[in-house]
Image 1: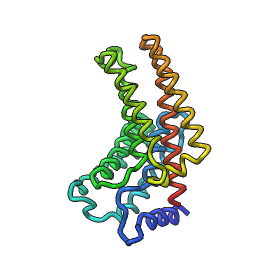
Image 2 (image 1 turned 180 degrees about the vertical axis):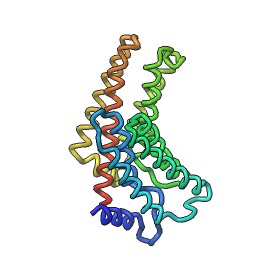
Image 3 (image 1 turned 90 degrees about the vertical axis):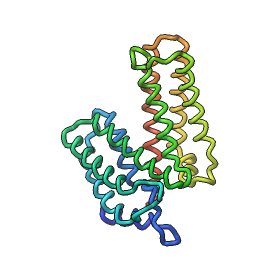
Length: 243
């Protein structure tokens, strides 16, 4: 059954002109996101099975990749890097090193994002969400740093405002420009996740009014959880849509 699913995914990566679409692989994205989000869950036990599926999918996927998707992209190095990091994640899964699973699966999400950026593909909503999470990561690191990241308060508030602006930008994308986003927005799952994200962000903003750094931590953690949920939900939807 798994072989059939992989074959369908590869056939779906061929466009109407018979040319491989070499930048969007929702099946790979989904596995990486499941590994990444799972690493935050102490009860997550599917790491070994997920990385096995990812490794198999990547081996099949390489069969449809042209030698040079773009003259502006170091494709050979990309292939080597993906092979290396998948092996590294597999080793981390085998040793139950969840922090390494988290680190390298998130890194690979950025590797694929960089490929899409260099090859000039259409807006890919997952990449927008990952960029938003990067802003969140900076907020999180600042809040948990005893030195507050050496930021002035106005600089920190700038990060918060940047998060809000980025989220608004994602929500403002025209649905006609992205079918996956249209499907996701119309789902009850998305409406629930978005409502939770907005609520968590509001709680986070309100926590800042106290001016005490320790008061920011729990609302910040809850914001991160809601972010990962909406990203996982989007990748699941894209996978189902592609099948």
